[in-house]
Length: 340
Image (cartoon, rainbow, N blue to C red; front, side):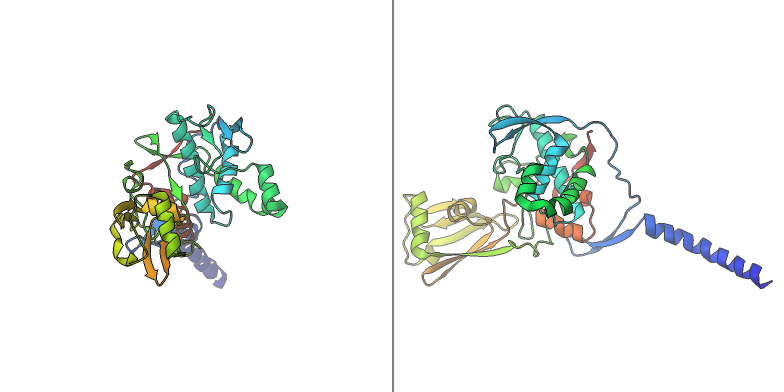
């Protein structure tokens, strides 16, 4: 009599626990912090990527390789292996790398959709990071980073690209201009406050996980005489001397994210970007202090500040955000579209 009772009780317990086990294994609730400091729960209903709707051959693109001065035909996904490997650290989390892969792919499609071939010898994309995207081939990566990196890190880069094959970001069903940069000061910039061009998806948003970036805060110290010399070298008509610098150098306005917008220097009004360029600062978000014979720039962030912060993306990934959460946070009102 005892054995049937034990069997019945075991069956009941199994039936009760089975839904819980399925829930844990396949649905996974994650509690995360929002930009306002509150928390919310994201429920992952499936491990399958909901954006994978098309499964066709990836296209071949023309790439102007700046290191060889030649235009090469490449599979777009193969090209992206070399882009993501050079644009983002392989030590970053998988979801951050996937977000980077989608942004990099979207940039190529944006250039193609808008027929942007200027300076590329007829190609839509080049390998100059100052103009388009950084890139290194498999052999170049192997030579630069060694056999161990190829074995341990390259598969991680490749997987991030492969897992998002064909995915791009769109706004009004068109590829966006997916700008990105290294590190913000806690907020990203409105595009119109930095580049004078307004894009509805490049809005200022909070970026709360930046402190781990090695370039979140930096200082640059310049001798007063060098400070004045560099300014006069770039603006010959500027009137400024070492006396009372703290009175004739004033920050007049800042952007929404805190970067210097207009700064008065002697008899001239310059932009924060002007000062950043002259002194090689990491960003335009800075304060200036005058200590004796030294001018101290206290700088937050690294890069232009528009679009996706790469270190912010890494911080979000560490907080269990998925790559689409990251992308939708930094690129306002966008959607992911699978194009091949």
